[in-house]
Every structure is written in C-alpha cells, then in structure tokens.
Image (cartoon, rainbow, N blue to C red):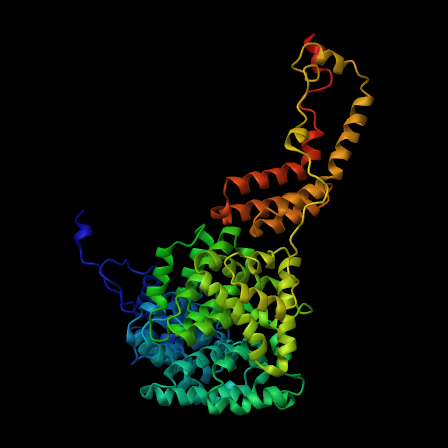
Length: 617
C-alpha cells in the first residue's frame, strides 16, 4: 500500500499524463543506457569501445546495448556523436537491430515524445545517411508517416521542415536510391497533401516552396518511382492541378508521356493500375490506422461514438479536409482477406459517415472522387474488383442513412464520366460500366439494388442508365392465363382422402412400393413446371431490393447445393439489411417464393419410413 503512494518516476523521452503508466519500451531503453554508462563511464574512446565489445560478446546483451546507445543519442545532444560512433562500431555493417529499434521508436513512441528527442531523431538520420546505412530510407518512411496524424498542424509542419532539410542536404543520396524505392512515392503522397493545405498560408511559404521543388524533381527525374502509385498518382496530380508549377507535368502526362519515361504509354496506363496497399497505408499515421482497424475488425457495426472518437482525434484539425480523403483511400485498400463480413459492413458505415462529414462543397467533391476513383479507372483486364466493393456498400448504406448524398454520388459518377477529361470520356464511361458488371459478376452485389432503389430520384436513375447503357428493368408481368383460385391451389382433401380419416392409412400403405416414388416424381415434375411462372408473378409484387436475390436463387441449379446455400445466405442478409422495408405482405410473398423454389426438396422427403404404419399395426 505504501509503494502505491510513491511518486511515479517520469521518463525523459515520453510526455506522459499523470494517470499514464511508464512505457515498457522506454524503460527497456533506459535500462540499456544505464548499463552503457556504467561500463564506459569517463573512459577514453578506445577503452570505452573495448568495454562495450566485451559486453556484446554475450549475444543476449547486444540488443540491450544498441538500445541504450540509441537512448543516449536521443537524450544527450552533447555526447550524441560519441554514442553514435559506438553504435557504428558494434553494428559492424549490420544495422538490423539499430534500425528495428528506431522503427519501434517512430511507430510506438513518436506521438508522445518531448521536443528534444524528436529533434535528435534528425541527427540519427543525418549521421546514418553520411555513413550510407543500408535501408535507412525505409526507416525514414515511418518518420514521414507521423505527419499524417491530423493533430497540431504546427508540429506536422515542423516535422516536414526537418525531413525536407534532410533531403535537400543529401541530394546525392536521394538521387542514388535504388529504382522503385518506396520512400519517393510515400514522400510524394504526404508532400502533395500538405502543399494543397499550405498554399494559402504565408507563414509556411518557404516549406511549401521546398516541397514543390522536391515533388517536381521526383516527377521529372524519378518518374518510375512515382508511377508506383498508379491511378493514385493521377489523383494526386489532380489535387495540385491549379498550381502553375505542375502545369508542365500535366502537359507531358497528357501529350508527351515519353518525356517522363521512355516506356510510359500515357495517363490511361496509370489509371488502369491500382496503387499497392503498402504505399497507401502511409497515407495516414500508425495511430490513426490502428483505430480504424479496431473498428473494422472488432466491432460488428461501427457505432456513432467510435466514429466521433476518430473525428475528434484525427479529423478536426486544420488539415482535416485532405486527410479525410486520404483516410478514404486507405480504408478502401485495407486487405479484405483480414476482415470479416461484419467489418465490411463497418467499413461501409465508416466510409459513408466520413464522406458525409465533409464541411465544404469542394472538400465533399474531393471525398466523392476518392471514394469512387477505382470505379472511374476500372479495367477488367488488370483486375481489382475487390476495391469496388467498399464504394458499393457505402452507396447502399447511404441510401438508407442519407439518400440525398447517395443521389449526389450517383449524379457525380454521371458528371465525372463526361467532365473529368473530355478526350477520355468513352474510356471513363466504359470503366464505370465494367465496374458495375464486375460488381454483379463477382457476387459483390447487384447494381440494380442501388439504381432501382425507391430513394433514387427518377432523373438521376434515368441519367445513370442512359450514360452507362444499363437497360431498364422490365416489370415482370404475370402469365395471361387465369390464375388458379386459392381454394383450388390448396386442394383440400375429401373425407376419404387424408390419412387422418378411418381406413385411409391402410389403403395407402397397401399400394405397391415401386409405384410410390414414381407417382411422387410425376406429381412433383408437374408442380415444378409452373414454378417459374409463379415466381415471376410473385416478383411483380415484391420490392426491388429483394428481387435480384430471389431471381438468382430461382435460377440456380437445384443440383448445386453450395451455390444455393450461398445465394440463400445473401438473400437473408439482404432481408436483415432492409428490414424496415418488410411488412406482413412482403414477408408472405417472400416466404411463398422460398416454398416454391425449394418445393422439390421439401416435399420429396418422407418424414416417416415406409414401414412405419404397418409397424404400428
């Protein structure tokens, strides 16, 4: 009890609140530093190195000593060179441990670090670049990523100022990076976002100008590295299209692509190529990404309080407009194989809500473009249908949550196909049409569920169908033959027909068994002949949201049980998703469809064995 009243020991790296526990990693680094200091004390450099070499002779102590030396670099600017030199000696060309430790510092500790250790991080990178530490560029990526947190804009700009200065000081190192290094496209993503945000801010004019110069140089001299972004490079350049510094880049991209790269065939090649997910993850900070993953993986449906939690922490700062669009791109490309059906629904709710939170018209248009960009660029020969699903699910959710915004998104697709770049109008229109076809072909959903939704305005629906050549749904008309009266359809048995009547069980059981299945088969085949007509008649009265599911289930082969099970699950999920559209009449109609579709399986099975009645006798 007495120990709990002792004052908590404060760390020197992290700025912790009064109720936060000491960070385990900080304690580990601090203990390593204490070991280093105890062994080298005030020894001369050569003697100190000998002492450290003796300690790391035990392989288990190597990580501890390297962590302690890094701690000294971050906390002691006066002796930082001494500690870094010792780290260079112990690494002996293998920097794996030191780089892994710095990565952990940048990922786990940076957002809560004091100002001085943050400044010393740049000392570490400067010295590492001077001695040409291998793969130091991959570690620098994690430093840049911390600018995309949506926190204090001044802190983000201070970080970017340090990164830009580092790159300008070591231009030769930057030029010598291996082809298709990840640092350049990641830095281009982050710099372009802040260029857009800071263009009108006079206090950041110098930083903005330096970032523009670097981006121009990368696009002209290292275009193959930038082209790794694929269609997101086009999106990035569209964001900067009003800046005169990028006019020449656009001219070359559209009219002289070979000037950018000898094997580059133009903007359509970029549009067809999806951006690798590992690049888009750096669009937002690790802290932001982890919160998104928490909601998508561990909550069955994203609740309003969790979305508000993300908004207040990351999307309420001065750069929230562009960061919101960056988050949308990251969420769309989150790997589908790591998420469940529940998380897919949570992602749809998140995307719909974050898009709806856009504060200005320009910002909302940019968010719409980021949400549906993969539709406008889709090429079936390249693939990538999995990135169409988030936009489809978000649209479906918005039709119930904010139908006006859903209509606006559909209208946006129509307008963008014509206005985005008129010379590419046919290509973009075809891309959207192919995207709609892929949504249906890969069982993502049915486009008609959205297009024919009762909340879609008639003018929007007609313009959408006309633009993307989607045939109008023809209403299913019942057969002109007179329907069977309900009394005849049920065929109420007479007094001598049912097994509940006296003597009837005996008369049926006396029939030859060889005739029983034959008779049943004939009766069922006659009943199944009219099942398609009956389904068609029922569909005319069923709401549009459920028609496609019932049609698909009805058309599936009765021998393919796996496909029928999957289609049934999808239909039931659709019923739950649209439960507010179900009334007693709709429930009866859908139940009748189920009975009609599965009639053969239900009525061909005998609940009792053939010899059951004789056994009772």
